[in-house]
Length: 324
Image (cartoon, rainbow, N blue to C red; front, side, top):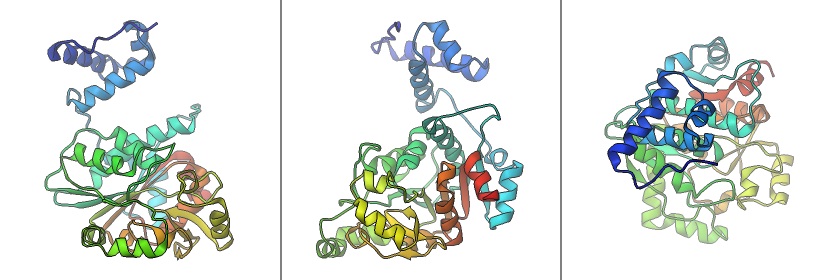
């Protein structure tokens, strides 16, 4: 049974406790399990305490993104696809990770990639989904001067991921950025109403802002039946089947791409309040973050379509892209 860690400690005591846990983990190299055993709490408690130590600025993690992009796999992918940089979330050869564990690891690496790519004064567009949420959850407190963070997809929620604005708000907060959420549902009930809503002055101004991004941060989904687009209720199984039959291999900002990265105009596109594929392509820097070899066709489509300048993937997907 966990020994309770009181939430009523004076702030100085709490910070001292968090500092001690951080020192054991980052300084002495103990595993989370070893620390949990020593302190007689669960491993989940230690995970939360380490996160709190980062969020409160007790721990200042500075990872040079050049080390993450310096592996032979990263170099080979850069050369193969003409990318500016590639970041790899590496797993040990004998390490078997669940998708959730791989996604969390990728999220941490993607944070370093984002901070490596972002520059003072940038306007950053942030998408939605499990992968982007993993980045938001792992994002350290690291202000970047004069940055704007904009929501790329209107408000939506699913059983897998909190509301789409959460990704944008969390990343904006950690960057100390001005946050522009998209004040509309991501999906409207019919195309005519969606068109009228996109013409509303407030929504129109927000969407126009997405056409002038310096950095787009997003992921891409595959077109399997369990894709998040269907799970979130934004497309039906029949619509997804029709998209696959039309050649769709990937989904970006709830829009379908074919194998060459061209957009396929099929439902629910006409009912969306979200960034256009052209908005992402127009951004000077385009950071694609993808987890899993099952998304290799989708990731390759984004690369072929000119939607990627910087790529962050796990080892399995990186290998599939290089040799698949």
